[in-house]
Image 1: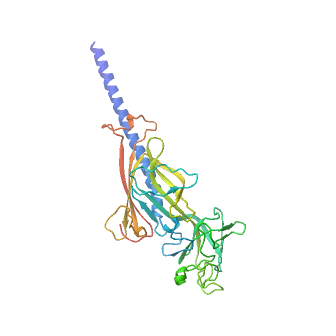
Image 2: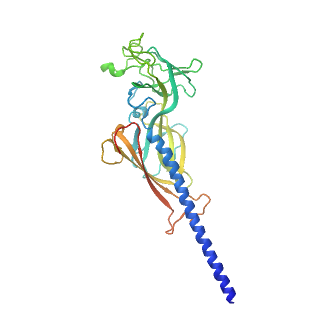
Amino acid sequence: MIALVLGLVVVAAAGGMFLANRRIYASTETINRVQENIRVAFELMSRDIREAGAIPCGGSAQRINMLNNSGNGWWAQFDAGLVGYENTTPAGAAGAGVTIPARAAGTDAVDLFLANDGDYVITDHDTPSAELSLNTTAGLSNNDIVLVCNAEYAFIMQITQVQPAALHVQHNGGNGSPGNCASELQLIHLNGASGCQNGASSKNGYCFTAATGTGSCQHGSTAPAQLARLNAVRWFVANNGRGSTSLYRARILGLGAGAVPTVQQVEEIAEGVTDLELQYRLNGAAGFADAGAGTNWANVNAVRVEMQVSGMRGALSENDIRGTDGETLSRTFSHVVAIRNRGGVL
């Protein structure tokens, strides 16, 4: 009997150690997955935030918008670089054939505007015409909204025709969607009250591969020039259809002239993100503040990102992802991202 009792004690002790170790393993595995998700989320989101409003030719280039209704579309926000949405503010609509997961209540969102898609070199533009010669046209399509720039000027325009065989793109004026206000690239700010002048008669046409005063170029430069496609992306938290929420990244296109952008190509980035809180620091400000109607987005030089991430079951059981209080294990992480090429010290 004594041996039997001692044996039971040993078995009970071993069983207790096994259960305790399994519990520790499950908790550790849950926290590891939480940390993995937050690491991926912060890394990918930070890349976009850092590049907000950036152009391949440097931040000193003066930006000129050649689009019709240039102040009434998502491209009008490019100079701002980003636009934040507080948790009670709607953030756009879906494009045709695109389903956006329902945004989680009480969470923030942000739109980021980038010119980091493509590395096209302008090889010939020695007249202020509607045609640019490039090193390649691969990846460009009709109606793409692009930015053409050198160290002095950056023009936002819409491609009206891609000519792959000739390595040309055209940007004719007209009533497209949105369309360009003129066929030639113009220094609109020098035209006075008349602004953009339709046709090819402006005395302030600009050339990218000819110096000022050369031929028909009233203004120009031989400095290296590039073309890049404009992109806009949205980061938000939404229901993932599996009983929980995730962090999503969506591409904004919106080729129309409406003020509300449309969303395409929704991608799930990290599972288990239950809350996203964003605050913004203006250049010269003492601290960070929530998004507001009067926020000067072009003056934002940093974003504070705070995420709450909860454990997900995966191969674990429901009890494995819960703590001793019965609640799902979760962690809240905060991260500050500085926007490149913007002044100020954090």
